[in-house]
Length: 328
Ligand SMILES: [Zn+2]
Image (tube, rainbow, N blue to C red):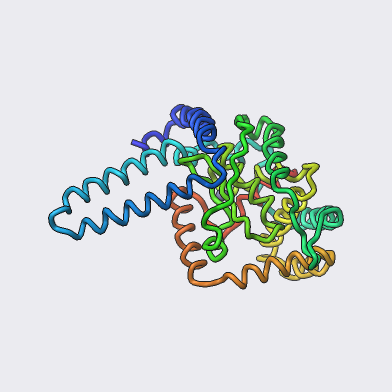
């Protein structure tokens, strides 16, 4: 049924409208709860599923347990598709841009040089901790700014309605997340945006903007990055702007390095002292938390994204595609 739905533009647009209603409704119910209710919901679901699977191994209870398990999986899948899955079939943002050229390294290099300068300038205006590493002092303010900036997105790119409800939650799984390589996630069942509050500050504001782009109704990963970029890049909130400019620069470098590693090396050498400290701190955080869990989540996350017609985390070209064409 969902496969057939996904072929119809009219039905997809009905799901888009339904998403706005569903999200607003769920945010009214769940946003005021001071912790991530969605995380608790996942834990409880996990316990129930584990219990039912255990029952499947007991002869007397088997039939009943299998029936319940299938029912729960079916309900899960149905609610997921209705409140989120169908959004993967929306018109891609790239089709809404006037310029639709293939990304090209020369343009990417020009933009990287511009973003290097932007980063350097903004970096001088933000706070540092005692080790001289960038620190985002006021996450509440950043969250409010993101919600506000979503109202100002260009209409030809997004005509989605933000709810103006703050539903950002620090993830209950942050200790596990440190090792997972996952910065945040959107919970389609509660419309909460989870982020890992233990990440280096340079990641956090942009991650908030990214997860909030999902809340706004952009399902595709690279489109969420692009909307987050639009939200953050002209913001007067310097912490959000620095995190956004820095993400943009890193994405451009990741794209350029395939063709011209020397160019990337020279840009890295021209980082300001503050940026170099931030970069080292990010790297040490990632190295410290590398391990099998990272591989596990890397693989499962890629499978999830690919099953939703996403390119996975290996290539970053669609964000670069959007960025270069938009800048053009
Ligand atoms: Zn995402």
